[in-house]
Length: 165
Image (cartoon, rainbow, N blue to C red; front, side, top):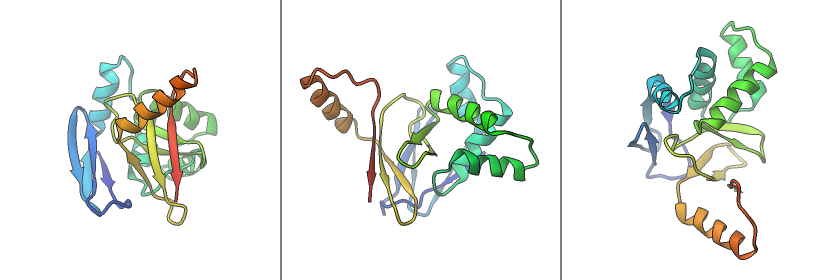
């Protein structure tokens, strides 16, 4: 079980979709997200959420700010686990493939996904002062980017918009 605490920039809070259900997390509030939700999602996709993958996901979910691979490795070592960077990167790759987390390339960090039930691009508001990140869920932005790309005969394979402020 992971506890997600929302302390992002929106005073009204944020909605998070887990296992097909939308849940409201108020500013400063928390949401319990079970490992079973993530495991069930993986099972439906024909994959398996191993203990290590689950622990890496919990570490990311429980962090108030996005984390880099070495910070995750430090937490695993504090847990008493043996590990090396390739182990963490393999777990992160799996979680990315399953849409449970996002990688913010501009900072080389990882953050939990608000809509793990659906594969999607992402738009993120990133605070340079506090390091907090808020994922937007606006399909209009994705559609606009695809339309602009199509006008230029550019095929969009994936999209991730990172807005620093």
